[in-house]
Length: 111
Length: 351
Ligand code: SF4
Ligand code: SF4
Image (cartoon, rainbow over all chains, first blue to last red; front, top):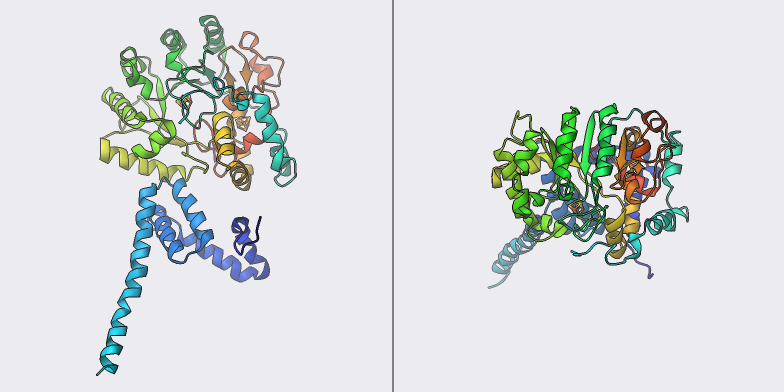
């Protein structure tokens, strides 16, 4: 197999980041676990948000993880795809809204 | 979805020996993953011993009106293995004397056994505390001769446990076949009408959920809430509890895992999710599974792998509860399916 930067097997080793910085690592995982607990938002809603953000962050580990997490929670593929569109819409909106900055600059510089 | 059983297709996985070989070789032989025995031994729980018998599970035959892709029984319309009335008589003798409080009829579709109703009538006279029939729902609507089943179940105070892989049509039909969802909904409506599954009703209706693919079931409570909400809102259907059951790497599900190249990942996931606490409550410790031809097994999974109980009492005709309560459970790597996360049994999570 050709070598790539990303290895799916590395996801399972995520917990190992604690090895080289125990305190911070453990605090992070505690925080992470807490974030995804049932709260004002359901764990299911949080999972879908995570899936959308995983895509905008383009993190292959998170995409694998939250696709599986969604399946385990009974999330349908239509729901997953819609969530990704929300991420994509914000991403493209964020790109385009900067167009106003470009327009402002043009208006300022152009005679 | 395949329309024939592995057996009918003469698939090599129809042979239990071949399945056991696969489960013992590969990633388990290379040492990449701990075997089930090794994992259980880490907390000194090996070998697993049986306790007091509580559940007698009887498989009335492998014939089924469905051919679900994940079926660990490899059931289907083409399977001819059906319990005879004679074996049923032997079961009844045992039911009369056993200390088990739960009788659990399964299959295939147990209703397809020609003596099913006779057997239920006779067994219900014994006064067992919890009398379960595992009904796949579509059987009820599949043919006129089964339409009266909800009334029949009610008459004998049977606890109905039914499989339902999802609250949407797409995911249900993918696992169980086209049209299964709408037929299941129709059957659930019929059960609700006679009182099954209604709040405070004594007529128990529980649903079983298995994941429709190579992933583990999520949190049972979360799934139950979602099922309840969706079935009530969309179809005005009610039920009591949801049992989330892990698919074990046996028979058609094993075939699927291998064919879809998910086998290693799935086994790794099961092993990673191994929970020593779940070992204490695996269902084989309080269950005996009887096959259509009367042999005794630690559970329905071991039955399909043809791993008979390690006891002198091996057949319903020589059933001896004292001997059976002291047996050692026969295990292999498929057992990881019972100990992942919150564990899995015919009654759902165990921790
Ligand atoms: S899973 Fe149940 S309903 Fe489906 S084929 Fe097997 S026995 Fe029949
Ligand atoms: S598969 Fe059967 S024998 Fe193995 S742990 Fe589960 S119930 Fe027990």
